[in-house]
Every structure is written in structure tokens, then in C-alpha cells.
Length: 147
Image (cartoon, rainbow, N blue to C red; front, side):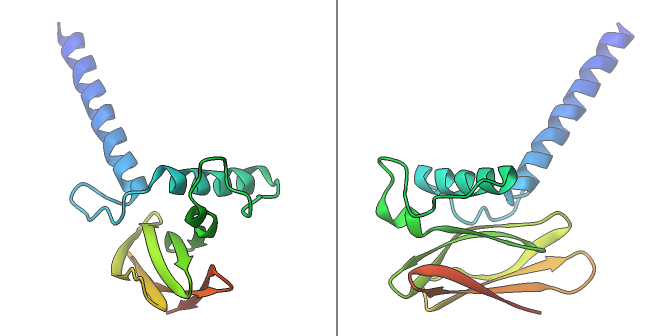
């Protein structure tokens, strides 16, 4: 009986730890702001980019999957040491679709747009903040880093 209770407790702790880890990877934490919920087209675009980076194959960002809205073509996954951002352009206005801090970072400040320039600041537990400024150039999000 003691082993059964111990096994149950270990399973409960593992399940709770896995849930907390998944929430941290999504950038929401247990009580944090979730930012933006991704549309199916945004998820496909982000997964496509991540898959091509992982496999080393060229990504065909110019051709969306069938049934994908035209705006999803302009979404871009931006990686920084402090975290990742998905941004899109409509004309010369940029909008941050989602943002997620890297491990040991948190989101300190966000100006998601739509605006000519959007900003997100990732704050580490120790060290220098990573400030990301995003604007549109040629209809695509481009970045500059600040500190």
C-alpha cells in the first residue's frame, strides 16, 4: 500500500512539473500574460520556419500552404538571445503577434503595435536586458537590438 501511495505521489509530481515546463516554454508561466493566441496560419508558419531551420533545408516563405491567408506570408519568426517573437507587417505597420522569453528570461516591456516600430524587452535573471525593436522593410519585419 505504501508503494502505491508513493508511486501515485511521484506521478502527480512529474505531471505537475511537466505542466509547469510546458507553460514556461509557451511563455505564459502559471500566472503570466499569454500575449497573443496564434491563429492556425501563424502556427503553420512558425512550425515551417522552425522545421526548415532544424533540418537545414531552405524555407519557402514566399509560398504559403493552400488555404493560408495572405498575411501569414509576411509573418516572421525572430530569434534573439532573450527570446523569440513572431511579427508581421501590413504596409509599413508592424504588429507583434506573439513573444516568448528564453529560459532564465522574462518579458519586461512590450509595445506590440500596430505601429511603425514595435518593441519587446526580455530581462534576464542576471545580466543585460535584450531590447528588440522591429519595423517593416519591404513588407517584412526586420529587427534591431538595443541594450
